Structures are given as C-alpha cells and as structure tokens.
Length: 403
Ligand code: NAP
Ligand code: MG
Image (cartoon, rainbow, N blue to C red; front, top):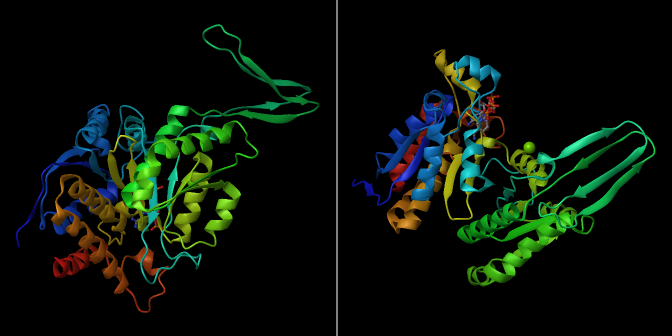
C-alpha cells in the first residue's frame, strides 16, 4: 500500500510516563505504516523541559503558530514530589498553561461515544462539547474575612488622574466575608471568537449562558461581547453553515441540556466550565473517552488527550507488570490533528485516513475488545480485556480492513 503524503508538517509534542509509551506504540502501529508522516518533533518530556529551562515548551508553541496544527502528549505538571523525583532545577509551570497563554486559546472537550457505553443521561444521543473560558472570575479573585463591624468599598482609581468610581460593597454589622473578581474585554473577546470559529469548523450549534439578569454589569458584559461579535461578524457564516447561536440564562441552559439530545457546543464562563465539564465527562464514563482541542482565535489548533500521564500505570509498566491503559483519547488527538492538517492542506486522503482511524477505534470497542477501564462500565456482554499494546494492535487490524 502506498503511504499518504503530507504537505506541511504538524507540530508533535511528546510527553511523559504511560502516555509517552502509548505515543511510541501508536505512531509505530497506527500512523507511520499508513502515512509518510511529516512532523516537527518537540520533546516536552519533563527531563528535556528541565534541560532546556522549559525553552522547548515555548519553541513548541511558536512552532504551532507557524504551522497552525499541533498534537500533544500528556505531560507532567511538576509539584514538590516531581521536583525531587526528577531532580529538577525548578518547579516548571504547566506546559498546557504556557501553551494556552501563548496561543490565547480555549479548550473544547467532547465525549467520544460508543455503543455499549451509554451516557447516564438517557436522552443524550449526541455528544455535548464544553468550552471553558480559562481566564479570571473566581480563579483570579481577591477576598477577605471581615471580623468586626465596618464598611467595605470597591474603588477604581484611573491611571490618567481622571475621576474614578466607588461603590459600597457592604456595611458589615458583624463578621462576614467579601470577594472581588475581574475579567478583561480582550480575554472574553478571544474566548468568544474561539467559540464561534470552532462552531463553524465543527458545524455545530453554539450555546452560551450566564446570569446577566442578576449580574447586570459583569455577566451582562459577557453576553454583550458574544452578541456583538455574532451580529457584526459571524451571523452570515453561521446562517450559511446552517447552525445557530443561542444565548440563555445559565439555569435555563442547565434545565434544557438535561432534556436535550446533545450535539452542540456549550460555551461556559470559567466556573461553570470547571463544574459542568466534570459533569459531562463523568456522565459519559471516562476522561480517556474524551477529545480535547485548544483552539486559538487566530486559527491555531492543538489536539491532546484530556487525561494526564497515568502515573500509576507507568510505575506498573516500569515494574514489568502488564498494563491496560486506554489510548483512545491519544488516538483521537492524532486523528483530529491529521484531519485538520488534511483540511488546511486540501489532502482528502489524510482526512479519510483520520475518519478510518476513528472508526477502527470505535468498531474495536463495539466488537467487545477494550481496555480494563471500559470493561468496568460497558453494557456489552462478555467483553475482552486487552493490554495496552494489544488494544492498539486490534485497532490496527481493523484499520487495515478500512483503508
Ligand atoms: P491521570 O493521569 O489522568 O490518571 C488518574 C487516574 O485515572 C489513573 O490512575 C487511572 O485510574 C485513570 N486514567 C486516566 N487516564 C487513563 C487512561 N488513559 N486509561 C486508563 N485509565 C486512565 O491523572 P493523575 O494521576 O492525577 O496525574 C498524573 C500526571 O498527569 C500528573 O503529573 C499531572 O500533572 C499530569 N496531568 C497532565 C495533563 C495533561 O498534560 N493534559 C492533564 C492532567 C494531569 P486507575 O489508576 O484507577 O486505573
Ligand atoms: Mg473541575
């Protein structure tokens, strides 16, 4: 069989622990036998990040700006224990955080649905994609405990010496608590753009919700920015694509979603996204059955798995014990990146390959062959538990019949 040719490289970011092992097997068995892979390789493994003073993470993000499509393996975000374990020069920051800040992106997460692993919400027929705004609100708040009567003020002092603003937050008559939050028009605009762009790229409806009836300045600003962008820029594109933008109150959104069929993108403010993404992923079974893509408002795409490096399995692997780690999210990161590369470079064969790889993966699971995490939740009778490598080999067998 002739291998599929690529035009432009995609950016490949290798990672850590069990997902690094999976990365290797997956490339050997599912990618390079079928594709003449052009990738610019960046080793984001913790050891190499340490050796380069984390420069490699910055280089990888810059390469993503250049080539527009990246695929990333899960990486360790160091804590005190990791600093000791890897004898690190510094407690390096989260690579995902660094990349997201450089690309100014929003992360979209969608459950991967297969027959036999049904969502706990029975009316959900199609996956719901969550987009979480990743800046500000309660995550960048300041707060105080008040221990005696007194007055709390919120004050704005303009840099240019003009007259500012002041409001009384509360006149405390006894002990209590107080909090201030902020967000930025620029950040909200980027978030909204990423959401509109992604909805168009996926041809799915976009929902956004906040509590603007109660929060008449703060949440209302979110609503207005989304609305202005839609009306001034995206409306004709949405109409042409046959998709809709829908705004409602957050509690109404939650009530509707529990009765919906799914199949849309749900843009969430930071806190709503934190909470609701855990609800959506647990209702669908497993973080290993979820796609995750960082979309920047400038049209850069970085595909990754939503889970971590699966450290516990890696230590078993190092001990020579058998592991059964689910590679589905990592496989879909590759298929997503290759499909997007094919789309941008107009290579239909590459897009077809991505579809075939996803179909082979889903068919394998639906035929009853799966990793142990799915055995625990499947409704299929007599499923077969495969180890990490054999699961990937089973997918390869199916893939060969599809290509
Ligand atoms: P994790 O790697 O997601 O794993 C937590 C547990 O979830 C595992 O022990 C395993 O449960 C289950 N699990 C997750 N992915 C699985 C898969 N593909 N197949 C089967 N089971 C899976 O989270 P963690 O152990 O808290 O974090 C490990 C490292 O990952 C940390 O250093 C963290 O910094 C990093 N991390 C990276 C990313 C990223 O790069 N995107 C995201 C999150 C965390 P059982 O042990 O019960 O089998
Ligand atoms: Mg959460």
